[in-house]
Amino acid sequence: KRIIKVIRAIPKGHVLSYGEVGRRAGFGNGARMVARILHSSSEKRDLPWHRVINSQGKISLTGEAHDLQRALLQSEGVEFGPGGRIDLAKYGV
Image (tube, rainbow, N blue to C red; front, side):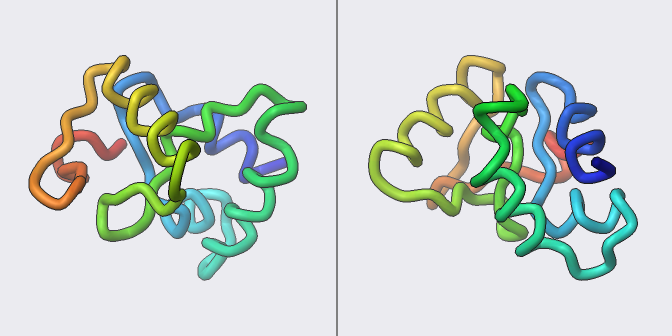
């Protein structure tokens, strides 16, 4: 429940890393837990899953899922730099 609360609190146009979501929810090293929750609950709980990225500022998903996440973030004003990186200092919460 705490992880879901943190994910829901990410505002439009901003991102958090899997690990940061875990830390804010009180799980020091909870990146994998966050990934599992996103995988199993994003659709049924209508979570803004696309606002969670990896610690390097990149999208971890591949193929069509990657393209969809990138499009959703861009539609919220998030810009991608070289190598598909998102500037966490600018777009992080």
